[in-house]
Length: 400
Image (tube, rainbow, N blue to C red; front, side, top):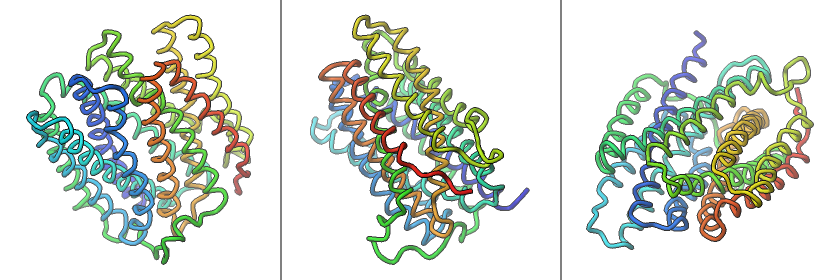
């Protein structure tokens, strides 16, 4: 096997293990604190430092990955996640309300740094591979993105099961121990200099990206903000308040996320490729973007006259399919636009925008659901995705 592909598979396997714990942690925190009586808005606020830390981690993580390499940053990310899990497990039920919130926010901040240090390093490994043109790049990016989201979905289900069977604290210890094994795998299998290069000399250079990178980063803010407005808090709380148990909500979200992860993995077989299958046309990207905005818009129009749980879940499944295609396209575009020598910095900047979108979406998910329920969240999602389409419309054709 090609050495670069072997390294890529090790990096991806490590990141998938991390993602499993990340998905489980989200469900643990969401359900545990909702059960304690936290409002939807307060639940959203618990995740804000997690998402804000992701913005910082991606900006700095790209530079650090370029400077110190993929192996070191994977080790840093995994170590931080283990520290965050152990720290959260020390939360004492006797703590007062304010101290509990501060404690969880701190733990979530550590996990937010961990997640995006790990993601930036892992995504950068794709650019270091020897792939066959744009088509090969699209397949590898799609496989990485799809498998990551499928694993996160399994993590959602695992989180619900762990909370039901073992409780909050014991679940966190199990996850920390499992990540310790992943840490050992990375330590002994990856070369020290993988992905290293000369980083930007000034902080300003981290923001001085090409117009293409800037545009796809802006589109990413609206794309993931639009998804999270109705997915992060609104859907889980809505299902739980409609009589679903923790493991049932976690199971559905797991199935949904695995489904859209699988769609991402096979996206190159669904999307119309141009230039003998080597690239994607800007027209195709725009069509998929507009199609995504139409899903919540149509669902909102129907549910204004009839609120139906089955209809909502069916709409979410359709949304997951179209969103998966869009997400896969965006992930491919940033890797394609990124400069080879400083790919980690370009990708880090892009995923800082991704984290910013999740930050806005998470806050709005709690706020809009508390103010107007699922319908308000659907309206917010629709507006964000229309904005995504406007930005995508301005993207240039990819050079082959």
